[in-house]
Image (tube, rainbow, N blue to C red; front, side, top):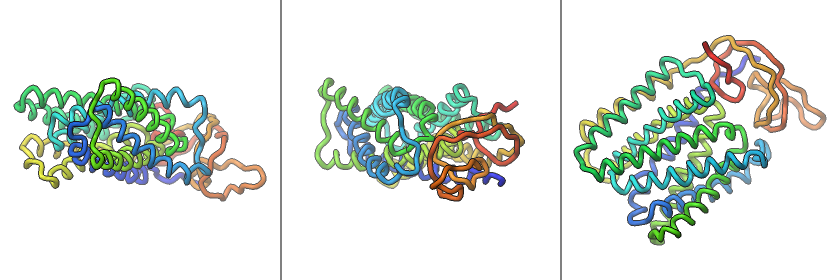
Length: 353
């Protein structure tokens, strides 16, 4: 059976992840107020943990479980992605406009692509490379446009860029976990991140949010850091870390639009130019069609799969027919050579010339 093209489905899942994350930026800016950066991060990831706990109960049966050997990586992901990055983001958001902060989040895409190419050798063709170049140039335009706002704005800008680097490392470190139960991965990351951020905030004697603001931060965490990350992992599973990050570059534009709707000042020429470059960059890699003959080495692993995707034709023991829906168990792939549309998922990490 010829495998279906996974790229369109992965793109739509990544777009949903971008929308749910990007739309929360103006709400976080208003709710955080005078709240400390680490307490803001703690409330966001507490909300993410609550949302993930609900999803985890519904998805445990057909997903690969998180095992003890995965814990060190999960802790590392929490440190960079649920403590360092959101604290930098909250600190920078308090010192920039929500629009500027939203668009600066586009730096996460080129950082993630670079990390994925270096660590996992994910193939980046000319179209994707051109898209990333446009996104990077858009970020540079934004920084140059903010230079006239003074030292405080520059400091906030650099803090948000640091947050995008932290989230890029998070995305890259999370890639091997994307084939496991995404709700459990998000739940573990969120619990560790919320706990550590709460401790640091308490030690630093930061200000806690008010009751209503705390509820808003929890809701933003549930949608923008819980549901969004779950969707992000599902997209990574289909199209790899680099392409998911590139599609996710649409999140900042969603955040900027939400900010303008909430009364942010009209966009400047720099902002409009940056937004245009971001859209061009996203469009370039969405149009990618990667199809060539390739060889799968023999492989044994565990992840959620079905038998209609052209890669899982193994037989089962009694009690589960090959025609069953999506399920998870350890299985083996024999070496095979074929051609079909594909992305750098768990089965397609071959080297390109």
